[in-house]
Image (cartoon, rainbow, N blue to C red):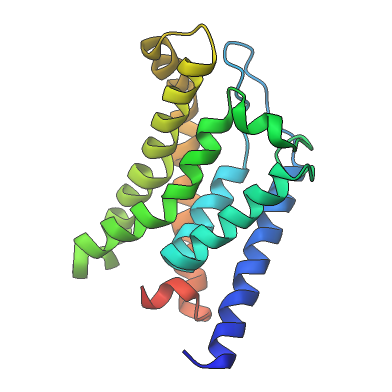
Length: 187
């Protein structure tokens, strides 16, 4: 890879981290029945996965989470610090790390059919919604007195909004890919 191409991809990675930080400034909407708010940062995770590919997308998400771990208030609602990574919402953040890899593995498996927007949307639902909510539910049940079935059931409230975020992500990503050479375009 040429030096200029690497610089280009690293710049995109940094910009994606900045997008994740900005989305964190928007406060989460608490639900009351579950200690997990509705946030927009997971849409940023989906965008990072789809645009940057498995290597740079995972790097952007990991660096973002590392900065939050260090205490920088980059998570929704101005949260940050190591304690968050053992709390009830940590499973969702751990799930975020897998989104780029799973998304691109499924896109590769789809092959030429991945150019279909509906198929890409379905793949994003699996990788960016169901995977993250599943991991988050398992973690939530381990970190709270809520049984796994209750945790999975309570997460159903997020599904409609997360599907809407996945749809918006695919629309945004498909427009941007036509105009800009992203790291994930060649994945």
